[in-house]
Length: 364
Ligand SMILES: *Cc1c(COP(=O)(O)O)cnc(C)c1O
View 1 (cartoon, rainbow, N blue to C red):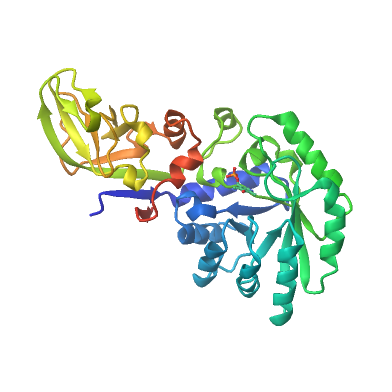
View 2 (tube, rainbow, N blue to C red):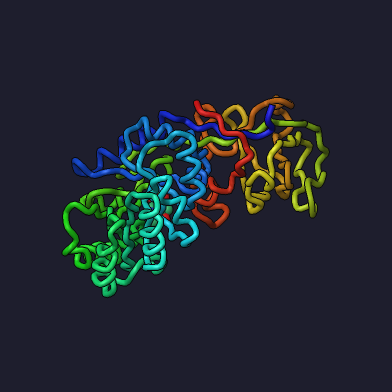
């Protein structure tokens, strides 16, 4: 029995893909982003579910993830949305990965490698319209594009940009979208254009383009509460642990490191088998909550490496071996990743990505 584990609702993933599809125009392809262990949901199982769910492409952020996909029989197009180093060209070509590019160095290497392997390398050129991260400026794009097209063994498969604030800044986002349209105006129709991330799909679905790159929404999470009014997504991930020990404590007992929690009256304290070592954020000390049999209990005292404590109250029937929910539903109650993110002053992305890889993932 594992002390802590993640359950992934595969139907929720398929529902969310369908919702994304419903919001978009006909013929818009979905490149589901599964970087960073599919946002903590497990790379290979999620890739298989998405393949079954009919997405057209999978987006990853590291060549090693792409290789893992190929070694596990995933046949879908795979796009690396992050720049690669020239030494990775061989793997990129031999595993048939589409590579995003922002400079000629990697393009040259891919061309050389593709010639060697008697094939073509597929690239997607990134334009930086205001994200301020990877990509060429709009002014440099045209020149770069014509240079890349001269390589005999390179195929420009796509041109794209990334939105920086589609969740909360419509005017900036529209500016990014129109700058992208302007910069890529002369790109032939056979080359796919893609712009929208999850918040883009939800708030700017009309902009569409040929393909979209949703990540967070595939997993049923929102960056902003008002998005819940636009689309009903189902969170796929639950995180659970077991009660290891329950004890009676007298009023005034101190709980965990630093004695930051003192029981206000005689009570029962439960010790649970999870901690920051598994990715449960230490900022949830004295602020997080857990669900046991549908009831919410506060995290009492500091989060330890492998353990947390919770105050059950005097008359609780909770016992060792009971299941506690850290993220997810229990009867009619729920703790969302968004809620934990707010408590940790971060975004839901970080809460779910933080769950360590060695925490078992179960697919239901
Ligand atoms: C992470 C990422 C996405 C997906 O973003 P979400 O907000 O999770 O939808 C799309 N495109 C690029 C380039 C990314 O880095």
